[in-house]
Image (cartoon, rainbow, N blue to C red; front, side):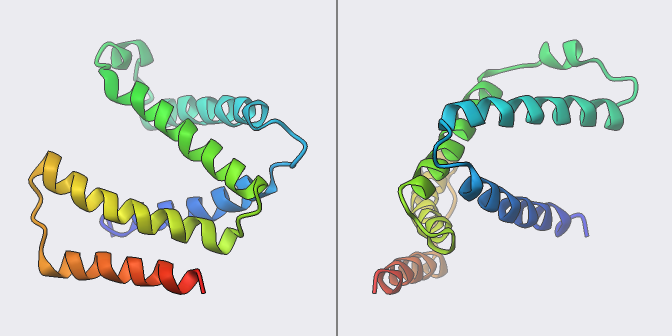
Length: 140
């Protein structure tokens, strides 16, 4: 179960995320909506920190900070704004995520090999080819 629940959480959260990103009013500025998104996200994160760590100290945790959380914050803004603008541009919710996931899978295959020395196996290459084939059929 410890292997399954995180992926289930990602899937359920991503479904809600895509629905919400598609539902941001067209006439609302994407950056204005993001301020609300991140205020709510910060409040939820702080609340969960104290629920999961009743004696915890955010300041103690912040002392362990490196560049990764800062860069993660920047990348999350890029992800969210990218989807909001994709939906405002008319991408269907049923297609946008599939297209980005296929390209992401291909890119992460290369990143995994170059940065983390992960093996590029025949099955991974086949999976990448299937991703490309899927993109071809989505375009039909």
